Image 1 (cartoon, rainbow, N blue to C red):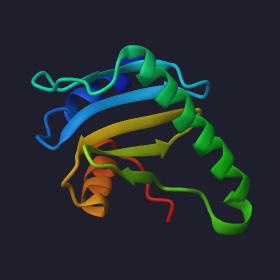
Image 2 (cartoon, rainbow, N blue to C red; image 1 turned 90 degrees about the vertical axis):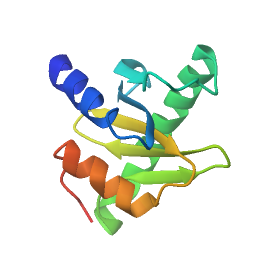
Image 3 (cartoon, rainbow, N blue to C red; image 1 turned 45 degrees about the vertical axis):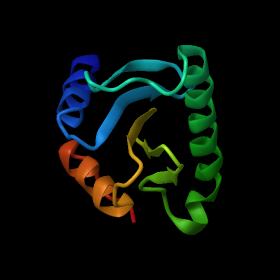
Length: 121
């Protein structure tokens, strides 16, 4: 399974707008993932670990509403320097950061297409 995750990350990192792509377990640990070669990380490794844990906690909290509202396809946050995306999958979370000027919906659908993620909306 890890090889599949690695190949999906490599595919995503070929997109010029994508800065980072990685898969997280449900505890927020990075299973596999990396930055695009020419990208300088904005956070330390320790800060990224904290951010990953927070991202997974948010996903798990949102799942409480799946029965009433339907499952989340993805969540995105636009910040001054980056846009972050989380995609809940079976027992893992795809975490992607992209350049701040991306069109969120277009980029989310591009990511879902590249990774063969079904749209739950």
